[in-house]
Length: 201
Image 1 (cartoon, rainbow, N blue to C red):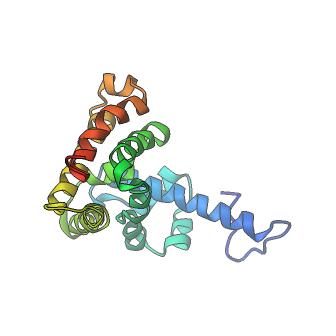
Image 2: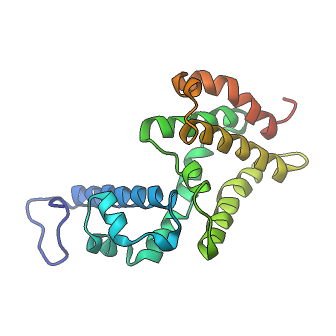
């Protein structure tokens, strides 16, 4: 990519801020490509070349930014950043927010990392890492915000509702769901999720 300089070439006529933005944008494209492939193939079957082709970059550029394949997929298998966005609302409004986030992500970006990776082929050690990260960074983090009995169970039920909705929208591609306004769906489905978060309110 001409927009990304090689390590040896000096940068001229370009400030550091645009360079950092360009690097972050390139990293995001690489991570998106790796997530896409992981949602469809076992980790062992994915090559850096395949990720590079999907991202439109060279394999050496992936090595420059991430070091190696394992380091790249360690980032891909983390849900921290996605969970930050998913859970970014007051508890009493969180059900609707999470529903809207999952659908808007798929509608605007073509994917939602939480849904796509949750349905990835979960094989071997990397599958267990993915499951452990999902539990710790999504469901257990959500449970920690809940009050009252059975917080862990309620958090898992709420997330299960989101994954089912995401699968119907993005994988089964339900036509009625996809034709309906995101806010209208959030208004109808959000209370179902909210009932697990703040039951009886």
